[in-house]
Length: 199
Figure 1 (cartoon, rainbow, N blue to C red):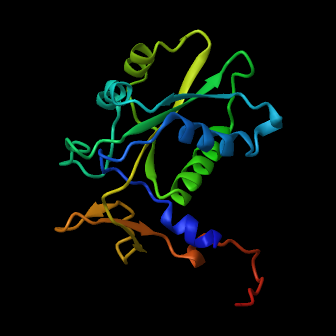
Figure 2: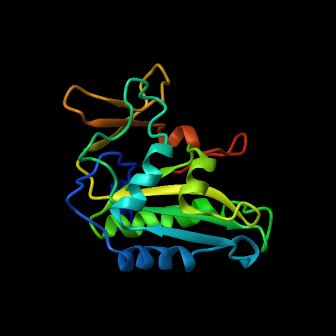
């Protein structure tokens, strides 16, 4: 079921480093992004694939993991991601990438979940550091997102936002990651006086 797959596709930040992801699997994941919609069908995205430990560890220090968890400095040794996909925008095609990288990232994460993997879409990172360690041409490519991938070793629990309205994710004493979600009725907008039939 599609909804079950979407519910399981969460942001995971702790991984089993003994489970590797080969280059071919990353190519398969990117193929899902390739087939996804693109604004004006320009298809301006490129993908830097890192499946070897050395490359992933060079990227790792430049990633920022969980802004709401101020005490947590990111995955500990043994829980690092085992692969990364860096999504780039090719400025020789366009200077505006619209929502393409968001669509592509979600397609990749859904496909990863289907394979028993997981990951985190990271938008907070040191661009200069990643550009330098991967040798990315600054004059042509914009670094848009980094997808950290692996086999998750943490549990992520969705729950309703409480009466305080606080949407910040948090960890309980057992290390389970809780993610508050706004209720559906708060998200649906209607015209004044319009009645909505339930069901």
